[in-house]
Length: 87
Image 1 (cartoon, one colour):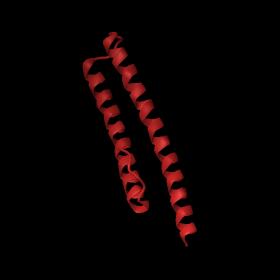
Image 2 (cartoon, rainbow, N blue to C red):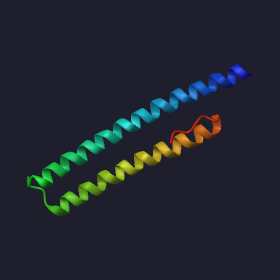
Image 3 (cartoon, rainbow, N blue to C red):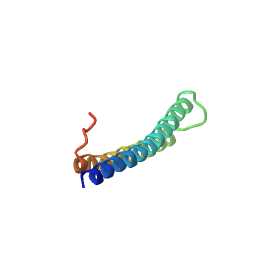
Image 4 (cartoon, one colour):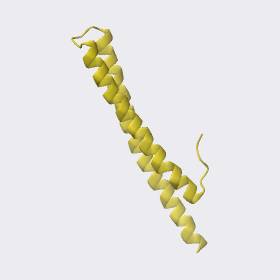
């Protein structure tokens, strides 16, 4: 029985790791897009302030959604399997 629990914990740990890595990759892509957008805006490359703000807001919302998914997925898994929670 303990072996089954350990196996389940390890599987949960691996699934969580993969899930979070995928979300982290998405987050990095969004951050890169935000940087590129800022570069366009600062460089005066045909982007109006309103368009910049709208796109920036959209990217920030996407980033917050990803961070929320990570939090909403990871915390319950850590609590269920009593993993040490990262700070």
